[in-house]
Amino acid sequence: MLQKVVSNADEAVKDINDGAVIMLGGFGLCGIPENSINALVKKGVKNLTCISNNAGVDDFGIGLMLKTRQVKKMISSYVGENAEFERQLLSGELEVELIPQGTLATRCLAAGYGMPAIFTPAGVGTEVAIGKETRDFDGKTYLLEHAFKSDYAIVKAWKGDAHGNLVFRATSRNFNPLMAMAGKITIAEVEELVPVGELEPDMIHTPGIFVNYIFQGTDYEKRIEQLTVTKR
Image (cartoon, rainbow, N blue to C red; front, top):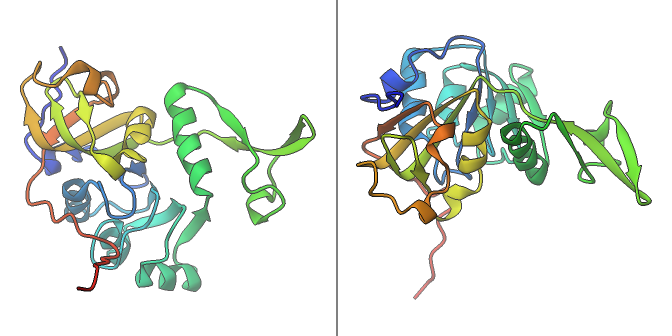
């Protein structure tokens, strides 16, 4: 069995170099690989292309890498919570590709399944479709979208074992499992690293065959993007 367990985030990301294309799991700020992002900031790699549901906020998540000018291109669905992202976009410092959220997920899924492309009705007749092939099926127009090609996928799970089997919780399952399948090399950080055999097989969301490196993270902030409470 290939040794997948590494000691920490620094060890996990040590081979990521300038110009890499990286998928980063999570939904908003939920289930993002906090430790790995901090390690990338510390490592100082540049000219990254980041594929993620969103771009974090100014002082958390991918926003930390934007602040240090490590991201060359951002491929996302929702980017409305980050003032530095907006500034870099409007100034031309950051290349941005906005994608409908379902298309983003399905392009990740296609990469994991080994499919080169998908057809989707999302984006037809909008700026998203400019320069892309369309085709009609049963009288409806669909847009050709290619599967993502990423060098690394970095995901965060609730639990995992030394074989790389992963279990996610709630909303963090939106993108993490898809991206774990799609990366050429997948790095998983987990809140709890358990002995092999402890995870119930029927509860495993991502089989270890998709995971190359795994480590137990620490000091998770788990920030809430928009905190809403009921007045009493």
